Amino acid sequence: RAGDQPAIVPGAQALVKGFADDGVRLLEDRSASPAVRAERFRGLLQQYFATEVIARWVLGRHWNQFDAAQRDEYHRLFEDLVVYGYAKRFGEYTGERLRIVRTTADSDTQATVFSEIDRPAGGQPIRVDWRIGGRDGVYRITDVVVENVSLSQTWRSDFSATIQQGGGTALLDTLRTRTAELKADLGVSP
Image (cartoon, rainbow, N blue to C red; front, side, top):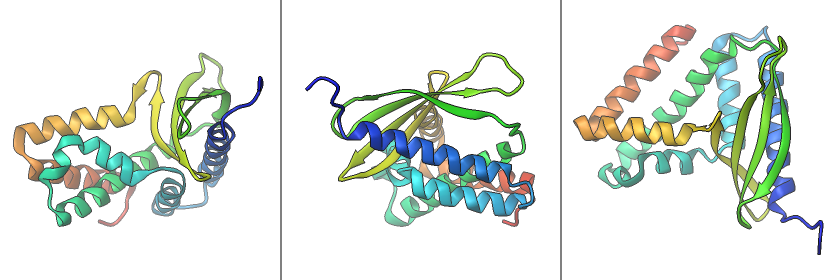
């Protein structure tokens, strides 16, 4: 029937709206320390994002080069990289608001939510597309594309280059260093 939309569309829109609303509440709470804000963001990340799927996709063909312990450490470091990287950006928040423009179903289990972040001081809105996966009424963000740049693809390229230069241990070493630096910048204990 005309006008019908696949179930993924309203689920994907609700997920992005929920993440944006919860994220704004977190950003507007200036009373929390950077460490507390980072841990709150970790909660949002775990609630709204398919972190295990993203982390594995980012490693791509290199996934099988890691043993179980290395995969566990990689996943933990990947999550820390995202959490502390974004926690650092929280301080730059100046009241931007996300507006959903439209949502398309890419398949029965995949959708893209197209949005713009309006800048309070004016200027061109920032385009942010959210790739959503969903099955059985459970939806998670699988990628964020900012101004046509996929965060997952960027990490995949960076991590692959590091692995090609020095192997899997080089990637883990690099992630340990990056996350330690981000934590230090925020004043968070290692």
